[in-house]
Image (cartoon, rainbow, N blue to C red; front, side, top):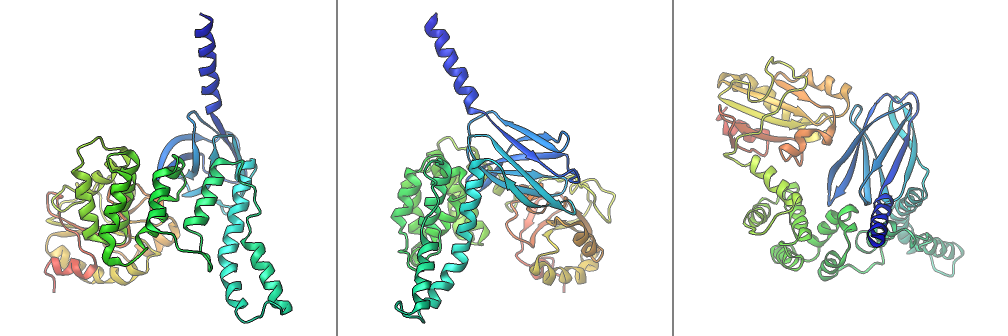
Length: 427
């Protein structure tokens, strides 16, 4: 009986130690009441919990162990704060200007240290390349040349003691090795990246390093060998494992983002054909892509505050053809392309068609000023890329277009506004 009691005590103690608290202090003038906490899985934010403000503070309790990047998101004004967890208590406060977050002060040791390291890192990446260029014009024996060499050495050295912080040490050392821009650095190889991905702990998925390192992998060597290089990577990481599937998911999304359609389709098909259990990360990537393939029924969306319609949702709109547009007032390509649709809007209506546009804006004034000139149905969540339809419809860039038939099936995915006009056979 004593052994059982002792074991129970150990389990309770372990469970208790696995928990940590996040304390957030805001100015009294900061009006948002709700905050969301997101963890990270590869490049995807994962909603962990929500909390309501009490006074000027939020107190969040994370009940499972977690080490890695975290994000606080305030949906009422689309503001966010990034920070880290070493599976220990976190404390921060911030100032605001016009209800927007300005200076964030990290009061716990882990985040204070991480913030200092990243600040130094940014300075190194901006200043060091310039110093290396200037050095070419001065001899080392010259007084100014010697001073330049000394400053380069100082900025290049690692003065921070991150060894006692497991996550900071993991992030900092691997960022330097694989992503830091250094004039005198030796390029990493495919095999070095493969070995790193295979041997890393679970902190790889929570570090935000995975996607940029995969992009680095794809940029090594001639593009003619890209498919062979990707196949080599996927074989090495084993797509029947959770990590291998996360890598596959990231690659599919990278190819989608950079409009590398053939590669995206090839590896998406490979993902669909896997016979093993598929993790949540890859399942989401497959489902999102299947929802937006030609022939699929376009997922419905309930309007938030739509203009030029009394309909409640996309599917409520009665039209023989529906042109769906995702855009933003800050998007230069949208600025160029939307006038083409405006010019042909009456012709689209003449075909019993309709245009339904969703903005990825987060500034209400910018959105309101722009939407006055758009004659079709418009809606927005004013949450930028945090808008729910960003993930639902697999939006990687603006503008993005879909054409639906009367039954809301996707019949075309044009690249540009002129392709929309061409598909609809409008002169």
